Image (cartoon, rainbow, N blue to C red; front, side):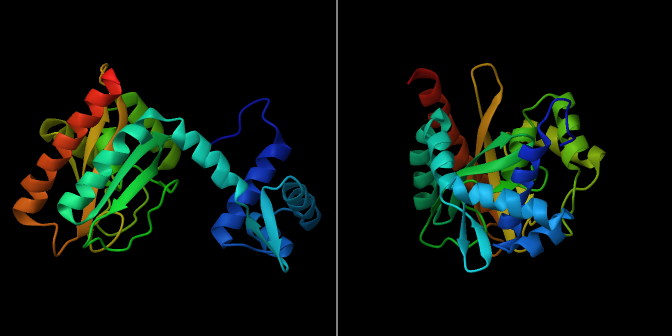
Length: 253
């Protein structure tokens, strides 16, 4: 995101340093300075301040993101109606399919996983509560994009691009818009190994009474199991049923 007038440079630097610690899975002052191309003395001062305030920890010579961020994230998550409302349906989807079920929302043009549940046959993937992903390469993200106004979709693509995550990722704007039109027509989105090789996903959007996208629910699993009628009919029907329950509860609870 481009810097805006009146933003605070020091705050931006601290946040970039926190992101670098996450990306580097912990690092010392020199490694962070080299990664961000910032003066070592500046990085040192920011790291010490973040440590003093309890937002990062130091283990030996390496600084790491602290658990205070977990406290903030959990506070935010539990304040969201969609999280509390969708969690039981996500658990039911995982139980019924035996696969991984998820709920995600859009924030700042990215998809954010709120919760997941693992069925008895679920494969291990890299998702977790709070993980951020591009919208264009996931079924969850495409389900949400399909319900957004075209100008909002264009703004998201302008800001985040359409990076290729696998050889199947949609990287052309016109192709993405065609895909979103198909999603709107059939009511669910599919991920054909577009973010992770060997993984397929089906997702359906959760919308408000005004038709605005609130979130999306999904079921994902290996291509060896998510195929044929299960991929095109069985899982989409289960998702639509779950979405219906979530939307009713959001509206009337």
